[in-house]
Image 1 (cartoon, rainbow, N blue to C red):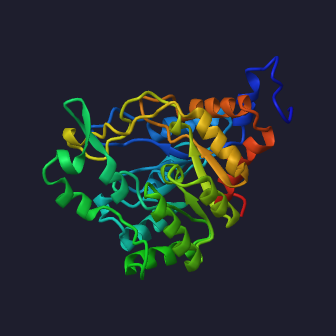
Image 2: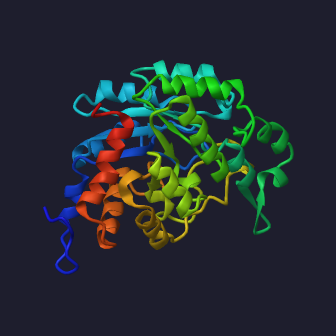
Length: 331
């Protein structure tokens, strides 16, 4: 296999070859709320990944414990091992140490603990409804949203002593070297604070989730990478139709119309190049019906990386080596 793909006489085979041994560490699969447009089911995802030669996938579930999902898939798909993570969420009372402890011990135990996605304070504050053709934040468009949802959203204090629940969660993750901490969809300032607190608590592996990373400067990202922090970039950041993907709330009026994907491929690629690929973890964040399959998302992303001059070694680092380090496959 060539180290770089030549500009002329490109092949269809190289992206498929680079799928072999790759890891998609951010895959959504059902079950989901009835208000969602649909997901591949977890067994479909595992079989597609296995058939394409991927090493493993890690399931996300914005509503529950994906380690249980992985356990069930592994009982059915015997020749391909999958993993799951846990996203703290308002359904489980936010930063709830008991929910985290359960996740760490459910099935084969989760490999990732995240501060959540759509129910972080930052996300809940910015997600919007479409009112008379204009985006209006839920807090302004939907009566009672601030009192019912913002009040219980996950928020990270930027200074002072962290709450006991947060300290207990960080201690639990620190005790599990195979588990990594994911900042989730928090603000950029909150992501930096999580890293500070987690490293002080002895957490070995930290991933800055792709929405939070996008809020950080290149210099902030370089500083985090120098500290050994992993930085996530996902195919969903630049590829997909401009329409809602995931509904966290079952109510129709709480369908986020702000979460659209713009054509950001060039800036996305350049951001990785500016920071350096050494600490990046590439995944898809795919699995919903309006997007290609996770395997096709990985193939597309690898193809684009090749097109923009990333070496085979750099791609392997971001799609195979670093995800394996995060999940603890080679420990």
